Length: 176
Image: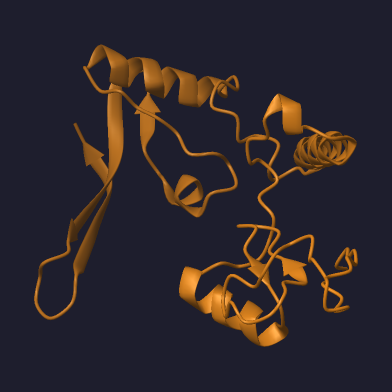
């Protein structure tokens, strides 16, 4: 991987110049490899391992790293295009997955939850709901009784500092 050119010295010796320069880890030999993430030049697998330990580098290129316009190449353009395609595939997959489809915050609520939210708002409570695929959404038994204008709250009393373990009590139908 090294580009070398030979120049004749007065002694007849040949010099080789590495395109990457010398190894930034050991400094003893010419570099052969460049880390895709932090661009550290190394000469051997041993130096690569040392580099990864010392700098806590995973060696995986950051696809969202800023590239100056003058340094932007066709390879960078292709990388950006592939990243956008991957994002589009992810969004399409979420739209098709039934469990992930209803995770939008601005999604219209079912009428019973909408009435509960409005009744709570009238009482000065900002009520938010988890998406349908969350377990805590399924176990929430808070209900609004429209005819009597009463909210039956499900309240979890959690005491994390209780000895020896945290204590949890649940009131399923706590009337306001």
